[in-house]
Image (cartoon, rainbow, N blue to C red; front, side, top):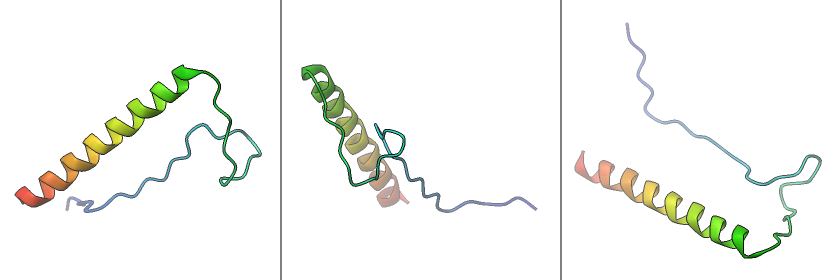
Length: 58
């Protein structure tokens, strides 16, 4: 009998240094990391919108 997974929750911490608490923010140096951050945010927004669109289609 196959098992169907309806929801999967994944929690990820990005750019965390070892031993640092999750509430501490790392200081970014340079403009490149800001561009990278914007690209990551844009990709995340796009994926969330795709998931929401798929839910509406069902």
